[in-house]
Image 1 (cartoon, rainbow, N blue to C red):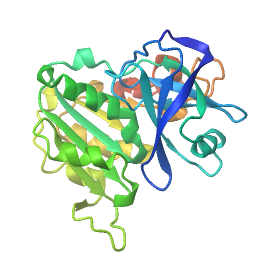
Image 2 (tube, one colour):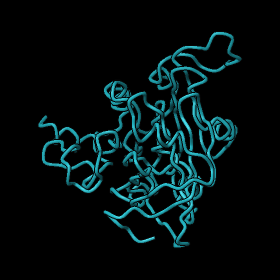
Image 3 (cartoon, rainbow, N blue to C red):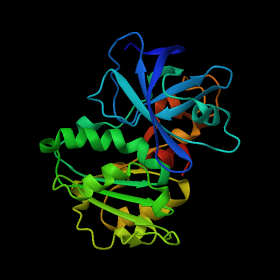
Length: 276
């Protein structure tokens, strides 16, 4: 599918999956039959007639070119997210994209990879995880840390179980608190508590960090302590975006438009953007 910046392309909703009480995953299949090629970390603008449009990261594997998947949290005041949650399988939505730069996975080849995702940040890195697993021999050690507020707030639970049992990836999960009456017998604590036992070759490691902004300084501190350089810490700032094409100015940070120059930036770039 060719990139179209301004004109949404029609897509039918093939499948809707409830991930949590507030999150749903939507599989969108394009009606024109063209291939949709994207890089992990890129995003699309999804529109619902009468409600508007909003940016969402592409959560599906790049190997699937006839459809994409997005995972949407319903916010009380989120017009588009609420409208999407009201749609049913067989309904239509508009899609613009792919947009943004994505993660430079070619540059990561041969290096160890550490992915750290918090809460609803996992959809932004799911395509990257799937890509690396599909090209596993091209990368070194692969560690994935995932944290959620409670066990019930975790998304993609079926895949998480598969990844935890796979020799291709070292997957570790934690929750901030255990649900009352929950059968959760895994780790309880902030995501930073997963770092202590990790054996990481800092100079050889590239880290990808996505989640709530409040976790960033603490995860950065842990990565630095393990010897990972600022230029090897990658973030996705998709939450700052609106129009996706650099026209509204909503996502401007310093002299950068997150939607055009990002949404993927290194921590070193982020420091320059903020004038540090």
